[in-house]
Length: 309
Image 1 (cartoon, helix red, strand yellow):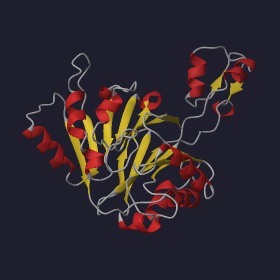
Image 2 (cartoon, rainbow, N blue to C red):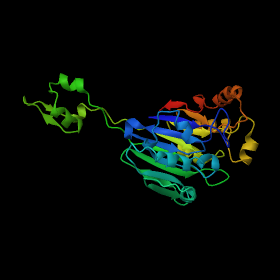
Image 3 (spheres, rainbow, N blue to C red):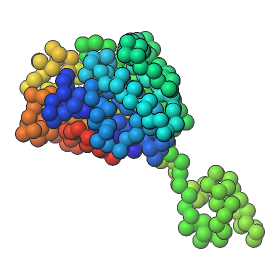
Image 4 (cartoon, helix red, strand yellow):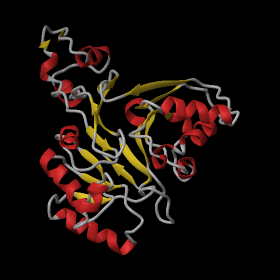
């Protein structure tokens, strides 16, 4: 499980940073990639990665500001051009209005897709659990921005315990069908009458990962709730230390406020994202250094960077 950042800038693209988009790569878990936001130029950034657009099965939009959605029509159209691959449907989750934006863009441009898009729109009254599969659950909660905006909490369900093959061999269990039965939790009896209890040879279930990905927001309690005990928190850092007033006026957070959220939520790692173009490369280390005085395990991400979870 990895996160690859396709755009880490705020508001408009710069030479160093494209606008918002990141990919949650779940290839080992479910052979899918989930995209979070799709700012202008996202498909260009994808060309510089190993991501295959057809593997993108779900897109989660945090809000409808242009730097988070203007790349959608282009990406959806390009995804259709891979004729040598099977055409697969795609789900888009986001605030009310995302369906109208996408369909209008496709209609006026004369674009026809060979796959279906399933839209899942929500408003302030229809948040909470927005998706559940056999392996993942996704929650959304409203944040505090200048327009309706949400954050997402992606929870991997607990992983099955692993079979201790060496211990089974030592107990005299021959490799083969009996291993499969025991792995499925079934007790077995060997030819010599020895009873093998499956629970003695399977480790306890392992807790799944928790990934919190927030849209644009002022510091708010909702951010903390979404991030409680998360393995990774992706939080915007449009402004820096001392910029609290301007951040509030524009509906954003500083690096210090992001660090406060991480500390209050008890997350394992904080990734600062959505960086203003006003910060030059020499300023990035200071953003991290300042935030680390509040929450130590912090990192400022850059475009195309891949982070293992």
